Image 1: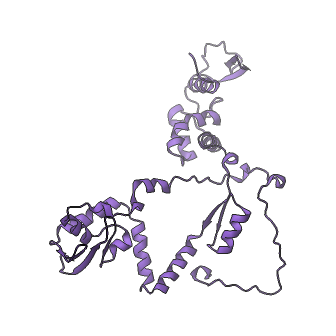
Image 2 (image 1 turned 180 degrees about the horizontal axis):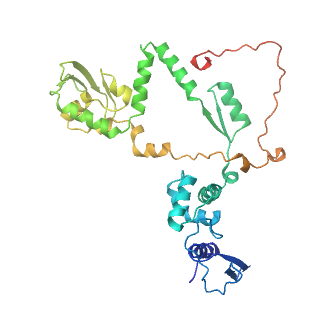
Image 3 (image 1 turned 135 degrees about the horizontal axis):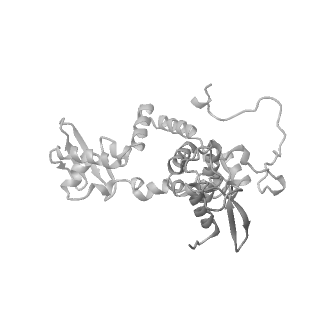
Length: 323
């Protein structure tokens, strides 16, 4: 039997021995790997094999388990140690300790995604303030800078109030519902079914139409170009997908209403949302010792002396400052 690597040979030998016999390594080098039965009185007939080993097995170590669960980790990175324990017990009838299952999962993740030391990066999360943005770009040029969504939400509400668009909370709820739609295809299907029940629209000019719904309410539709549309119901502007009134007008022109959907909903942009990597923080026991002499981006002390008293601020307080 031939193997492509030394690791594959050891894995195959361990897998065979778990259901047959426990062994010890006598010699190991680049040309030879010699093992012997773990029992001193064994004559290599393997009569000492025990099919049920609830107390553990010498060869069932964390390295072997990590090789065994490697295909599963590639598809399911959130595999739990309890699931690994159940998998090993069902396959080999061996009760694996929790700490060994956890260590095997850590080694498998390292094999697939690399170690934390090899893939570490700095990410700064702060308010979207001009001073913070400039400071992060100057002091940590290679770091990723992210912003609190709570601040963005409050700033958005403030901008909407200044525009005088009415009920801000209701508008934010509608936008939230639009951005969290479970299935854009299901939404389009409901719009298409609703448009079929509408009477034929009235064409006012080259681009404008008047549409009556089933409740005899009138709506004005404007097809600005091949990819932009407006309706007095406000849904195309809010959801960036055509409403039933737009679909009804486009159908009369024998055109596809899919051209009026924003490219944000395309499969390409959907995949780009999850294209970036996010590295998890390891356990504290795995943290490497920080060496200040090797730090490329040290934390610099401020170059000014703070004045006495409470500093003045130009920041507007909002709901995030409430205790």
